[in-house]
Image 1 (tube, one colour):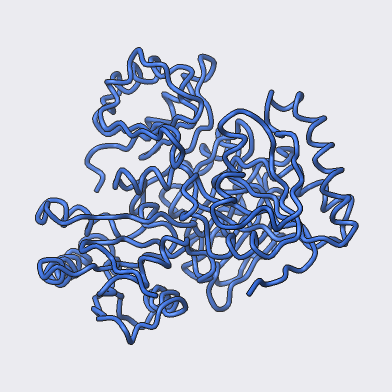
Image 2 (cartoon, each protein chain N blue to C red):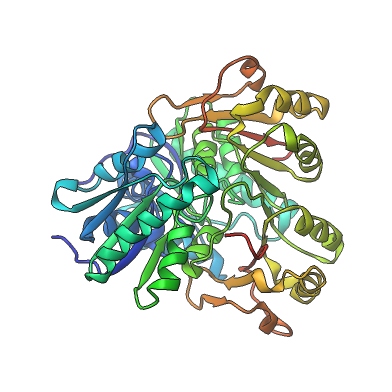
Length: 244
Length: 244
């Protein structure tokens, strides 16, 4: 029995990688829609959403829109591809289709759905929209490591990218927050480890890369990361020791 | 067909309330285990986990441990009930059962699983443990509001409770972060709204209460909250306007 989806746009968070970590609603929507909007591309992060979707739905039974990957190249470079994505999706929405746009992790937490959501809302205000929330990479990594992110009255900060220009901000954030999640830490993990050493936070830190994907890796002793080349999908969690 | 779970402890995040927002893995584990450890109690937050679980599994087919609610009364008052919970769960684990402990939202993001996880790991080191991550209340609220939490290089802060003693910290956090999620904002929403006005952040804020539960409510114009009594499960999200 296949449910039929109401026409409209569905931003479907599919979780960090393991298809079992998408929600019941996400699986239901992916199975019920007419059209799957999937990013095409050769980088691992690009084909990843398609691979997760394929685990719960036979994509041969759907119309598949192969779209350019929107976030490659940063904000400016992405603009043209965003317009192209909107145009392709809008055409299907005008025709009355139910279109699912799958997103790694959670759609609205560093997801690449916001630009499409905004364009559809502004330019096609009659089209119904549903956003299905999802599990973030850092929640999934904490579950695998079996380490609490935050408890009780602890304060959580998530910093999306650390680079040479914002190390002072990092230093400050580490002093005022109980737990700091650093995403895409690959660019200057050496400098980050120096700061953790300075502040006596090395022992409470752990690291994960490619969470839920092929080649995922977890590191409990972050000191061993020094000098290692790290991938783009790398995250480091610092929690003050003594917090239980 | 019912899968059989490997003996051990399962910390199962069930999402913020709507049973459809638990993961495929969470539903699978809840259906496969021998024992469900459910909090007993009369407050809405206490019986809530049980209600979500009942939506995906016939609890009459399981052994149900009715346990005291661990977080009532703060850290100290909770200690006795935590020990009792550990003792009751440990008895089942020793007997070789697969025990699921459901948790609202995400188990390790302000969840009440950390204390049990730690006790089982220390005192029953031979028992396998699995933690299933979940969707947080604030990710689900953002999806319902269709508003991005963070995009691109934006910095996210989550503050678990605002009270008269930490308003200066709030002021500081609002200046240095792009998005600030305030949980349990019920105690001093008036003071928070004053600070948002001071900093010109009122227009980019929105509010949600009882996300995914009976009586859930979303408020786009937070100025209307002044003078209203708010429930414990209340959250306010502040995002700097102009971020897209």
